[in-house]
Image 1: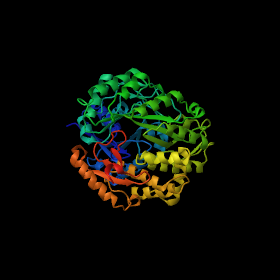
Image 2 (image 1 turned 180 degrees about the vertical axis):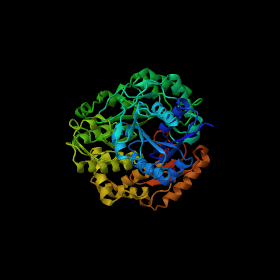
Image 3 (image 1 turned 120 degrees about the vertical axis):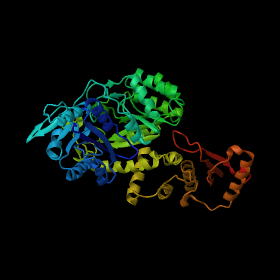
Image 4 (image 1 turned 90 degrees about the vertical axis):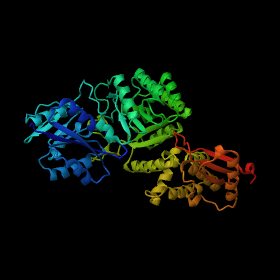
Length: 567
């Protein structure tokens, strides 16, 4: 009987809702390129999970080879996991791969004596070749893309890139493991851009066939997931291909593609043309999400990071998409880039905010292994954390304290804006305070930090919003309370206001009784709802807790003057 080589392919995701393509690609590579005696399984965990529990799952079949997919968010936890499994199964061969180890393989082998092999670059073919060699006890020294050690000697290999399309990861085993989590679809590899902070621009862009892309898109859309994220680095880099795939989705939505499924693309906003903009405008609300990594609006910064962008066209295209109201728009900015000081970043922030995206992410520069910014410190001077995720600590343009200041600004932005819970409140505040958006979030971020408000409930947070902003010049506390009430009813289906927003008013009971009489006359108005009285402009407001907006997540909100109900 032929011996069996058991292989465990492992990865730690950042959250349970996320799935990972990497181990499934590797599994498919093993099943297509390896000898029949090599049997592999995929083990997925999360960085927030008890690592002992993950280790037990890995060790259940006592694998002879254990591979880990490594990223900036999981590398530290992965190193701990390696120690756990080697402690209990010392004879196991440990193989690391993924972007976090592909460009520093020699360092990994020197620093981690428990690791025997590091696969650099695309792993499907090199890992299969390595496993075939291990299965036959053959020499592993000259396998493309495989770094190893022979005694004290390190055997290095350049990151592997193949001209072949990888075998599909979307097998029955994959779908059984997906369990309604976010599904990821890859229809190309590489990126046409070569941004100095990124790794995706290495090598030429390779597109999988449209036939394959459409087939796999339909498979994922029917998997039970609510969101299919395309991991193509710039989805619309190939215009005709983007038109074809978007048209395909629109054509089959509601029949071969179930209603309620959402597709997420990362796009370059400045190269959108009328054809793609027209298709996006015609899409049902909530079908598409687009993420646009602008990073900065500072022309000098964009030049330094090799990010060629037509800024005016970008802004016009974003405004057009946002105005249609049918697509969730996510904009990215990065703090810590070259030539971006606090004043410049504030200007970039205000420009992005004025475009009214549904989400505005304030990220911080990370110096990735293999990126130009990390490899050329003389051209990109900065101080950064030497532990993953290698976040910038100081630049010639931003001090350490200014970056911490931006961290506090980010906290306020996430809670006030990106939560989607304070849309009306923010519009009112910006109108009355006569300050720029960046200043509002920065000042409130300082207030939150001073209050130690990092772990408080939503209701307590609303109380802080009311207390802080009602003390600002030009703000009417009653009007601010009314805006918070409207926002709360539109985004919280409990319908019960936080205590800080409640007003004891006998008219509220009369209002509810009057609305019941309206329900009897107009049955279409029946249903669960939240009701409140507004006082700055005396009126009644109520939200129907059904059919939320598929883009914003808000429930329909109706406002009626009190006199209209005879109150």
